[in-house]
Image (cartoon, rainbow over all chains, first blue to last red; front, side):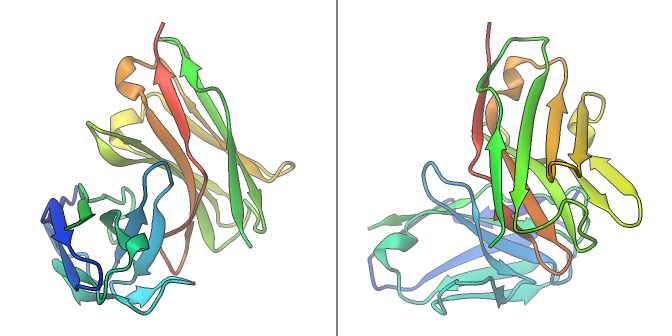
Length: 108
Length: 121
């Protein structure tokens, strides 16, 4: 089973600043990598799939990059609604589509 | 607009069966371009994919190794929904359970609202 490792566990950022989150796969997942945003009491929401394609309705301030084993998602200018937990998930070896443990983006 | 609506009890006794249903609107459970998944989330296990059902000229199911001996996922085409049954539950199965669609060209793009299930006597 592919293990997904996210870093950092928590990221403290001021509104308007840039945030970069990382995800590493234990073996290559090609570009079959997704990012999700989850707010308290809500289901995860798909942000990015195919490592770099924004899902429907996702603002352009979210961008994804990477392939193989190293991936990042960048939020160019954090808005108040972006403070949440972010998860990566590989779907190259599906099933199972393994998730990372999450990065919490909090207000500095 | 595709939506998933979950239903089912929030409390299950140990050794009994957890049963949840996910009703689909705006898509078909028989779609040839989607699979229908169950995922759970707990503080100890994080997000854990449990299984899926999908139709490609016939029905297929896949299950996570961790629950394979206890899980059944079924599709009901007459009601356009799919269901999860997890047998012989223990307190370790306490979690928020989600249903979700995976489109063939995307990831888990549509999620249900989640159901908190507690296993307790």
